[in-house]
Length: 228
Image (cartoon, rainbow, N blue to C red; front, top):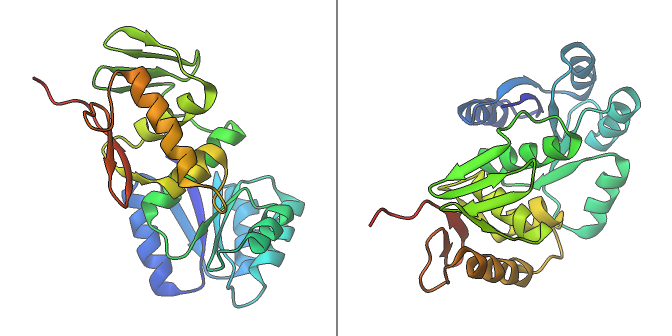
C-alpha cells in the first residue's frame, strides 16, 4: 500500500510496529534516530514517514523541521501528548497528521490512507464496492443495488472512509480525524448526525441497519447485508 519510513528509538516497539504495518500490506523501513531518518528520507524517498518525537540524538520536533527543509514527504507524528496546543505546534512545524499513543497499526494505516489521498499519492481503487453498495470516487456517485443515492460532500466522505475499512469497527474519533480533520475538540454528535442522514438515504435506520452498524461505546462498522 505504501512505502513507510518508521522512526522509533525503542527497538521492541520498532520491531512490533514494523511487523504490524507489514501485515497491513505496507513496505516498511525503520531507523532509531533523527539523523538516520533524515538520511533515509533522502536516500529511500518513502511515501510517508511515521515519526516518534522521543529520539536519542535530536528532538523529534527538530527532525520534523529539518525534514521540511529537504522534502515534502508526508509526515505523521506519533505523540503521547493529547492537547490542542501541542497538536497546533506540530502541524505548524509541518506535520501532515498525527496519532496519539497508544495506537494500533490499523489506526496508522487509516492515517496513511488519508494523508496520501490529500497529497494525491494514492493508487487505491477509485471504485469501492461492498455488497450492493458502489462508491465511485472519480464521479462522486453512489449507488445501492443500482439505485443512485444523492449525498452531500461530508456524507460521501464519511461513507467512503467506512467502506474502505469494510468489516472493521471504526471509532468516531478516527472518523473525526479522517473526514473532518478534527482529532481533538470534535464532537461525536457530528458523526452521529451524519450517520443518521446517511442511513436515511441508504434506506435503513439505526434500529434496522443494513450496511451501517453501530457498536455501542466503540464506533461504527460497515458491512454488506446478509443475503435473505
